[in-house]
Image 1 (cartoon, rainbow, N blue to C red):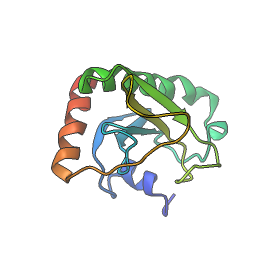
Image 2 (cartoon, rainbow, N blue to C red; image 1 turned 90 degrees about the vertical axis):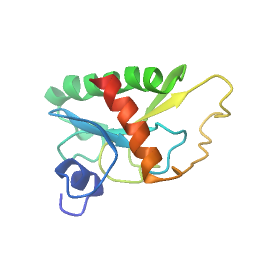
Image 3 (cartoon, rainbow, N blue to C red; image 1 turned 120 degrees about the horizontal axis):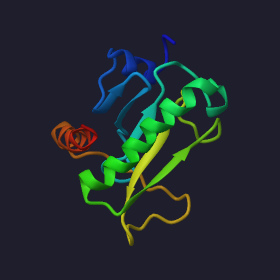
Image 4 (cartoon, rainbow, N blue to C red; image 1 turned 180 degrees about the vertical axis):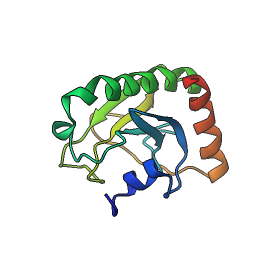
Length: 137
């Protein structure tokens, strides 16, 4: 879809700090992360919600989400992840995306209050993206 920022990232016409680019989807750092290392995973095809993702694409897409959820804690020294999808409500970009947020006990995240942050620089974001990409192989 021509005006979709996530389709632009998938196509390579919109810059992003990619951590993985596979046939099943693309993972890249959220520019306003809950915590540094917060990754968005999107399918390559433009679908708006999880309900729109064709059933044959589910195993590949969620396999990629699972790989990212395994890589993030190892790469960043976190204890786990929070994995979430918004469908329509609170979906800032109308293209299916799964949030993979690094978590550590006592990190201050409570319920669904997500204090957003920015990376200090493109260099910091590039460094964090590289750590996760390295863990993904």
